View (spheres, protein in one colour):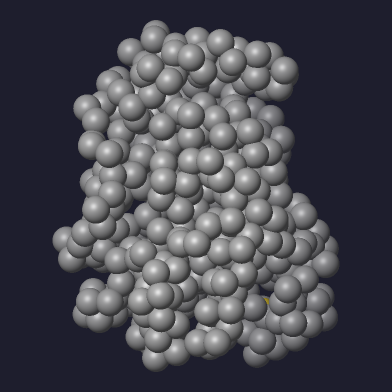
Length: 402
Ligand code: SF4
Ligand code: SF4
């Protein structure tokens, strides 16, 4: 697929009925039936125009042009949302063995059954031994109903040592040699810069999926630039910076950030990422037609001064809530509370509005790692480099997720 010339968002909106629905504000007043009805009319025009409306970028040294708005399937329940995304020209799908307890891969597999060659499919697992990585990858192939993954990733690595771990690399190499994975990569939520440099030096990996958003620091931004220069495809996840949108509207009734220009903070955040040319594609988790529309509509538009203003305002409001997952507090609690992971699970619940995911993730921690110990703890000795109140956050997480 060739990279296409972009058209402006406004022009796109003029050109499609779907665009008319995407005025940039949340479409809470439109019910699902209305949206589906409009989509069936709009579907025809999309068939004709879809590639002109989508911006594609090359995936590093991989010979494939991916839509810069990809499809993160972690939270998707409704397969018709994914179907429609593919109809619109989105061609990059990210899932994982663990998402939705295995059901995410099954859902994706059903949707791509008749259009396998139209998509770049990635999945990943958190196993760490050669045998378990390969076994889980076999399970993924079965669930996805395919005999190859375009890129298979070792999921959620946390250190540079893991990036060059013999077991992990041997398993990925085996999958590649057997044709079960065409390319191989890593996903990381923490220690990203160190992991990126280890990846570059190893000359082993094709793709990196990394937490990347307007709150990312200079160290990570520079590392991503190095990865891109080295030909590693950089795929951005957690692009909304924790989202927090619904939470803030509920919590701060006076918040009016969504009235600035015509984009909400989530769209502005996605735009920030896409405007970084070191990023090949993004995998925001898409759960609804509305969100698909919002993400899709920003392709081809520049990150503007008013987007910056929207994000600055939103960042100030959410600063005391957002854990940057820097990992600096990892292993510091004398009671072994797993602070970074618990912060992430709380973000699933509060930020994304995915309470079940937050609870399931919290339950996956051993009892020793949970925040129950914080209830009896008189004085939290763990400092947060970003000034979050760790004890308060841990107590909230435990009361909400346990
Ligand atoms: S709680 Fe603070 S120190 Fe710990 S990972 Fe989050 S931002 Fe970093
Ligand atoms: S309050 Fe802080 S030091 Fe105490 S158990 Fe919780 S995380 Fe650890």
